[in-house]
Image (cartoon, rainbow, N blue to C red; front, top):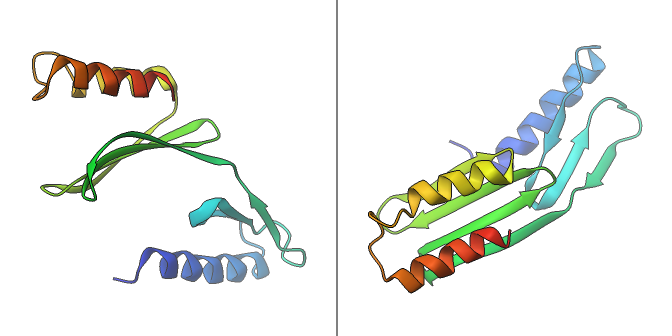
Amino acid sequence: MAPRCLQSFFSLAHTKKQAYNNEKPITLDFPLGLRYDSADIFLMKWSLTMIKKHLIYKIDKWNMLTVEVHGKTLILREISDQWGEECHTFISRPEMMHWAESRFSKEGFNGTPEEREAIMKAFKEV
């Protein structure tokens, strides 16, 4: 399987082909917030979307949780040395807070209450 960045460029080539064939144009989102809109094939439209990254917790290089704000969408990435990377996409902040309350419940949390409160406070600051 090709790396994610190469898959994006292959998709871009496919999009240009669709635009030349008068098919439905596609908008592609690339890493680093770059967005390509194929609606106008002669004027390539690149726009930079604002991405804000919040660190919820970081134990070491392989155990962390971050939230990226992409406009109205919240992308939560949970990286652990045991399970790898899990990615959750939320449309609203209350939806993310509901997930956080269930994921870091008082009964199931394996840390001190102060650690849990720090994590929940970081979620509320997003």
